[in-house]
Amino acid sequence: MATDLHELLRSLRVWDPETTELPPFDPGAAPADPLTLFTRWFAAAVAAGQSEPHTMSLATADADGLPDVRIVMLHGADADGFSFATHATSRKGRHLAARPYAALAFYWPVLGRQVRVRGPVAVAPGEEARADLRARSTGALAAALTGRQSEVLHSTEELARASEAAWERAGREPEAPVASWTLYRLRPTEVEFFQGDARRRHVRLVYRATEEGWARDLLWP
Ligand SMILES: Cc1cc2nc3c(=O)[nH]c(=O)nc-3n(C[C@H](O)[C@H](O)[C@H](O)COP(=O)(O)O)c2cc1C
Image 1: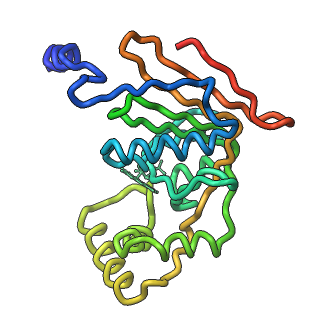
Image 2: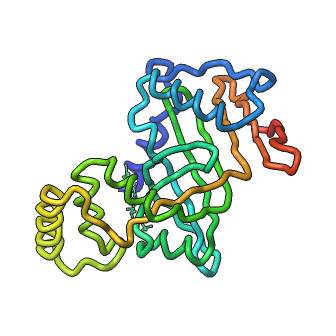
């Protein structure tokens, strides 16, 4: 079994020219603000047909400093930060309450691009979390209403019952409140843009927040 896995792993490559275009990236011509570059790269990923470009890895640490990571959706990126939503009572919600810092990673393989973001995380006002949830689908509301995220599930029947009730309520009451549903905003202190290169001369441009504004450096790949 392990041999099969290793054979499979060895047979795989990243950035197959049939599916990946590695665009040139001139860091000297990059904008002064990482949000402008993020917005540009995001639009390019969408235009290149990247599936689910708005999903990202969200890394947090628990009270002891031990790391964890999972995928969440990006809900927005603007002067207030990168926003995502989840239950404050979930594992990640508990991590963020204990240590309000996180890191994000986006990977857009069709363009060989990665973006990493780090910084402190704040809870957005409750009204904004409610508006954010109202603007999403019935399924998103039903999922939020199902609740108990990250608790141990004792039977699939229990989930089926809770989910059925949540879907029914979401359909009947599109503005149903979900007390634990929380909108978080990560305010970036560091944003790194990675552009893959076929000769492995990858370009890494990091923006770091300073009192005078954004400082920029290149990093060895
Ligand atoms: C594509 C994708 C998108 C997801 N988006 C979210 C999301 O926006 N919010 C969320 O709470 N969980 C989302 N999840 C589920 C999380 O990955 C995770 O299972 C859940 O939030 C519990 O994480 P935790 O136990 O670390 O709190 C998503 C999962 C996938 C695969």
